[in-house]
Structures are given as structure tokens and as C-alpha cells.
Length: 320
Length: 320
Image (spheres, rainbow over the protein chains, first blue to last red):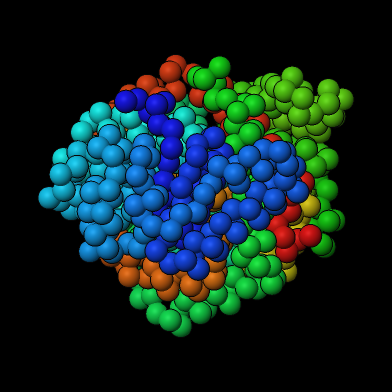
């Protein structure tokens, strides 16, 4: 089976990540069965799906016809068995607790057809441990998305020790076919790439606010109006390559000593107390002047979608 | 004097940063005198200015008429005195060495009119030290841009201990009037905000590549197709606010323990050897398939400009 043979999909677990995966799959035309052990959560997610598609129609991102087709492709079901029997690919987005993941994957492996791929959205766990002892450990894999996956395309893909390399290839092929950008890790590392990089930045952001040198909005501004405008196009190595006329070698050689000094000056993990979180909350409230998270997310989704369209219209020089 | 009273500007030092500042000022209609002690560097920068404006014309970002007007506003001069006598604002972008900065600022303070603001692009030095002992220390200030300033708008603004608060206000007002986004720091900190945040991310990116978990392009992909698409819109706190339906308090409370564990797991500064830099260089070469830095920069500038236009067309919900 190749990634392009995958047709029917199941989404298991419908929190913020799971519900967004539904949009990825139905957006690419796949019949998608949706299940959550909590019927309220499931109903909430199905309702979110319709509403979010309607918002895209209102925003001119999608035709009304396409939205209807996509809604029709998603079907909520009442049992795990009903969700996964006969599907080609399962995307699990349950709670981030090893005992729960192990229980879910045990059920998935027992109930799914033998060729189905079982993927977890886990951002933290090692598939070697989740699938330990399962007969079908070879078809179990991590596909950790960026939130929200139907908008932000990077997905970290890695197998456990027992995952077949063909399963990794098929998963990459399938995810690419539904518009995601899979990034393969060579082995498990705590937090994978994405959350390690994010934690490194967030830790320093915390330390800057705690030091009093700047407030939350100033730290955010340096990212959104500075660093982030480059990082939306190029990662840290790509940026280094463009920060000296002679490219990445010249850049990191010329600034090597400055980087070392600055890196050595960075602080460790600060205390993240309730009081500190409340202080962040108040400063975010001030900066966003009462806008709801739903409205901000809507804006984010529109903007990221538009930036991705810009990238399609203006590909990198080496893609021309 | 307010920031809007500033008319004539001098750019002193014309490397990658200084030459880009010329575009900021002429782009906003300010007569700009340009000086560099190295005549070749100066000629190179003036040539770059014309060519870069022509490229914008070719790319449809600027009319041919506007480009001519902007070129005409920049005049290279042969001495520091000629550059700064009678100007309202000086943007210095010389070498990052304290003894050199002190010598330049001593000259600037001696030669400039008493009301002129003397700003340094330094990314590392404390204006308290640069302007120590100068009669005009009160009008000396740091205005550290993101590279390149005519494209990426965030500028870190901070005074030294002797800088007048009115000079900070005027500088912020002026920089805003020329299209920059000034971010004020409350006091000096090594690397300011921007380079500390960048170093934190780069350090982890180095550690990931050195560990062998992924190559340069995979680490870059997680940023450009993941984290960076959000960071172009919102800094780390803004992103936290949108990653849970209940906002930033819920997000950092729910994931507090995960963040602490991951932050504690981050490594310190790796050895940045010549061999490691060469390895990065080779992987960047592979990823960019022979595209020149100039071509990539051109693409970056177009893309960042387009993203900023998108932001103007779709302002944040609280700006509506």
C-alpha cells in the first residue's frame, strides 16, 4: 500500500487537535469517521467543524458547495469499533498520558484491519513505549502536527523501534497528499523538534518578562514584527544563510563568539508560578483588548492560509 | 523637537545593516547623507541602493518614478563632518567593537548640531558605555534593527543611563513615522530581546543537528512550515493565548509541567567548531540547491513585504 491508496480515515479523540485533523482529511476528500469517548466533546467538535467551514465560506476562503461536501464526508460514530473497522488510516488525538495511549493503541490494534496505519498526534511520547507488546507495533507511528493542523502544515513523523520503515514512507506520502508537510525524525527525542525549539524560545521569553526588561507585548512584538517574519519563510539556518552576503558559513563564523557569549548568558527554567501565569494573562488581556480567543484564532487561520498562498505564488528560488 | 520634526538624516557605516537603513529613510522621503570611512564599501552600498530599488521596480513593488525620487534623496559624502553637520538624526552602523563605537560617538557628538539625535544600530553594546563621558550623552540612544530594516520593521530602542527620556520618545516617534515598529526596553540586557530570543532558538537548533535526530533542513522545516507561520503573526505569548480555547492562562497552566520538563531537558551551548559550521554550510547548500544568497534575499524581501501588506489588509481583531 502506498500513501495514495489510503481512502477512508478515522479521527479518534476530538479536542482542539483532533477536530482540526477532521478538516485536513475531509478537505482532501477522504471519508472520515469521527469518534470521541465523550459524547459532548464529539458533538462539540462536529458542531465546530460545520461552523468553522461556514466561517471559511463567509471569509471567501471556500465555496459553499465545497463546504457542504466536506461536512458530508465527516461522520460521527458511537463506538471505537465503528470508527476504525475497515479504515485505512487512524489519527489518534487522545489525552497525553502513557497509560491512556497504551490502552487506546491496544484497542486500535485489535480492532483495525491489519493493513491500517495507526498514527498518534502525541507531542511527547515514544511510540516504542505506546506500542510495546502489540502485535501490530510495526504499523504504529507518531504524526505530531502543529496546532491547528488544517492551517499550519508541519507534522513531525517518527516511528518507534518496531515501526516498519515502509509505514513511515507511506505515512509521509499520505500526509503530503492531504496538504501537510511531514518532517521525519531519525529517532525519538523528548519534545521532538518542534516543542524543543518552542520551549527554548518560550523559556527565554519567560525570563525576559520576569527580569522586567520588557513586558509581554514587547517580547511578542520582537517576534511578530521581527524574527517571526523571517522564520515564516526560513528556519534558523536559512536565516543565518541570508544574514551575511557570504552565506551561512560566513555568518556563523563571523558571529560565532557573539553567539557563544549570548548562549552562555541564557538563563535556565524560571519558576512558573500561578502568579506569573496570571501576570502573563493580564498583559495578554491588555494587548488583545478584549478580543476573544475564537476571534483571534479566526484571524490567525485566515492569515496563515494567506501566507501559505503567498508561498505558492512565490516559491523559493530553488523551487522555480 | 518631536519625531515628526526630524527631516535630514545621516547614515554612518554602510554594511548590510547601514545600507538597508538608507532605504528606510529615503523610502519615507528624508534627505539622507551617507558616509563610510571605507570608500569602496560606500560605493558598493550606493550601488546596492540603486540596484535594490530597481529590483523592486522590476518586481512591481515600487514605481519607477518613486525609485528615482528615492535614489535622489540619498547622497554619499566624503567626510563624517559633511555627513552630520546640520542633520536631525544620525543612524550609526559601524563595527561592533566598543573602542570603535566610542570613537565614532565622540566624533558624532562633537560634530553634530546640539539637537541632533545620535542613534546606534549596535546589537550588543550598552549606550551607557558608548556615550560615557560625552557632553551629549543625553541624546545618544540605541536603535537596533532587525536585518534588513527596510523590510523587517522591529527596532529595539533603549537609552543609556544618561539618555533623556524625551530622546527615547522622539526616537520612537520618528522611527514609527518611517514605517519601523519600535520596541522599547526598560534597561540594558546582553543581546537585548531579539538576539537573546534568537540565540535560544539557534542553540537548540544546533543541539538538534549535532544530536543527529534531524538534519538542517528538517529543523528549518519545523520552523518555516510550523512555528514560524504563527510567530509571523503573534509572539510566544500570543501563540500560547491561541493554543487553548480558554486562552493563555489555561494554556500555560495545563502545559506547565510539560514545559518545565522540556525546558529542563534543553542542553547548553554546544561546541561551534569550524567542522560543525562547514557541516551546516553543506546542508544549507543541499537545501538551497545552488541558489545565490542575493536571490534568496530578494525572495525574502518580497515575501516579508507581502506578509506586511497582508497584515495591513487583515488587522488583528482588536485593531479593527
